[in-house]
Amino acid sequence: MSDLYRNVGEMNYDGLISDLTPRTEVRGGTIAALEKETVLKRGTILSKNADGKLIVLGSGEGTVNSILCDDVTVGASDVETAVYTAGCFDLDKTTVADDYTITAEDIDALRKYGIVFKNASDI
Image 1 (cartoon, rainbow, N blue to C red):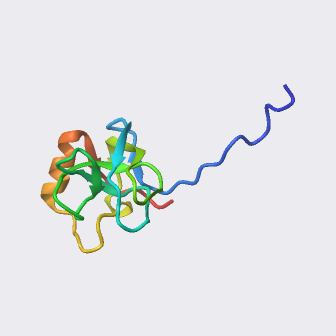
Image 2: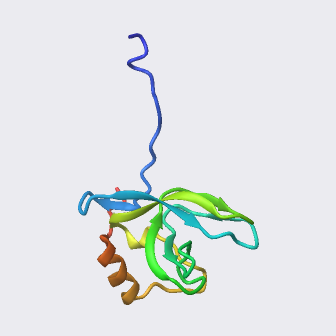
């Protein structure tokens, strides 16, 4: 009973999740291997390619699908990871491929999956 007061973990608010509704849902996904080892950041918007694997939105042909839960390093082999498949997120805290701009069609497609966007307060 003497450990009831100790700090078990730490949480830093990054503003990615901006509201409690719709409810956040997390599922597993497979990110396709990359030629060069790359760290994908939490909040990266992902699309699903023809092989059913996830890629960064704008980096190839695919259907917009989910948002990456945590930073993950992707190299020469596929990586299993957690992705958000529903929830309310701040679009300003998300990322896509460097030379890609998210479109209204992308936002509409994500809404069909239960992913919506709402600006968060930077309190």
